[in-house]
Image 1 (cartoon, rainbow, N blue to C red):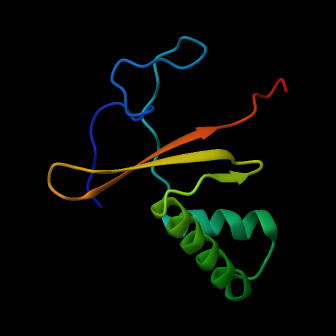
Image 2 (image 1 turned 90 degrees about the vertical axis):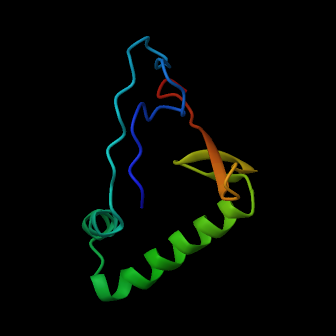
Length: 103
């Protein structure tokens, strides 16, 4: 996977968060670490949970690639825009709307 440089907040340079603070670069969580977090949070055994996690991630990827809007609480509502870039690659832009903590 290629590294990206620059701001990692909504893909916009100079964007600010809702509290007016400058955005911080996003931390990359690798799949192995993500699976370990899910196992720790659920208490499930790796051998039992890993196929379910893998299938879940596969289905999320397929839905996003198909341009489907996902409504998955507590993650939120994910709306996808599909485009082709100048080199013929596919660009998936994801907008994630979450309820504020005050709702």
